[in-house]
Length: 325
Length: 255
Image 1 (cartoon, rainbow over the protein chains, first blue to last red):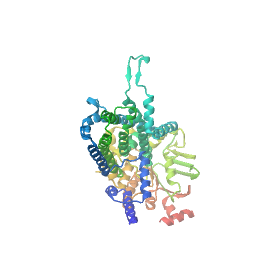
Image 2 (image 1 turned 180 degrees about the vertical axis):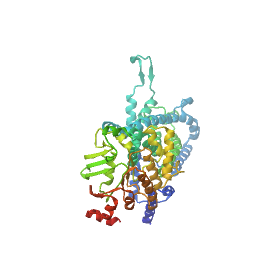
Image 3 (image 1 turned 30 degrees about the vertical axis):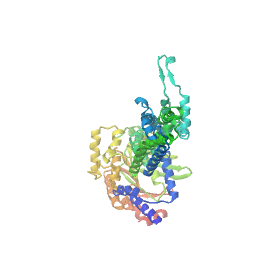
Image 4 (image 1 turned 120 degrees about the vertical axis):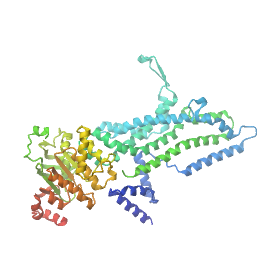
């Protein structure tokens, strides 16, 4: 049975190689075939994908959503049952505090909104810096290549929390421009420091995505461009990178999801995001330990509702772009 | 036709491509062990031989995709094995077509053909487009201008690749086993395109396994084995009256 399926798959990829019109439909069909590969093959493929994208894959399934909802409802029920008479019920408490946790007091865009803001800016900076670093990794100049490789590896393999600590403690809380003749003091709020702290590991991973995508193109593309007298720069910008964009989008979205889920780490440094505010809300409702699981699972649910569709979308894109171009 | 000819003193009665005692190694593996050949203007030359005999390496050296360790290659008098060589200037004169077509998949057939003249030669867009459409017609692909490479068959892709090279108005065309990846029916249409080119007087160097085609189209045939040229001659003498035992053995297996 197993041999038969493997053979069928082989036969289809054989047709694919001939490069005829029919190959497209065959290529698309292939991903839909329910083939159970041997464990060794599966883990080898997963490892290859992770190497290419520079990190693990968020493989969220609908059943994960069910678990999150069950956890949340169970927490609500348990807390409701444990409420002594005369006290605010957990569900009412949650309704009372949910606005505070989601966007902070009086529309100041803190709480969960700040998680999103941090993730947007960190992604923006990380993407721009990472793209530059990735291009340096495929430079022809050895020192540039080695230097950018070292930076990439350093930030890829450092714990996010330690990077965050270092950046937040390293940066001043304000930048005084008076010594250079400009009468201005620029305050640097904590969340901005967190943005910088998060953008560093993102940068390193985007750098790997860019390097991997450029390297994944067949060498024939470089050779035919070379034989048409394109310069290296022209080849890169007109031929190689446009083809890479498609390959880079799914892993790029994947890293955004990972980043969005990592932003609550900033609560440890007191940034006024959703986890910090949840703790404050729990403090305000003093001596109500039964509220703890329900508040935190509420937090889990909002993060899940935000991240899950994006992760699903990236998997869909991945499948679509996997068809041979 | 080009300025380089004036500097190098090359005239059309001298070989357009001249290869002398070329040695090329990949690490410890010596692939070319002193290969020489001359190709005159307007001549079509076929290189045949078993796999791994260095045929492809040899023609890749002609447009400096591979560098050589010793010997000399000149194209219209310009030395290719010169550290000061302007590779871009050389490649404007030398077109190359690959086994795997190597079209740019994100561009249409027409865009593939227009890209290099527009961005490398900086020619006028209108004029380039007009020329590209003529080339599409020449390789019999009218109506496929807006198709992407993924929508074309192998034979069609290869003909776009030939048109793409021709759009640069090269003086020499190199063909590296251009039909090896095609199915038998589509081989013919590509070979026909090449034959037309050769008959129009384009200087061509082909690496091929199509013996029947080589016999018809080539003015001269070179047989390479283990990095040397074992035997060469006009097709008639070469195929019917081979002298060297290695050539005879190879031909007996192929024909």
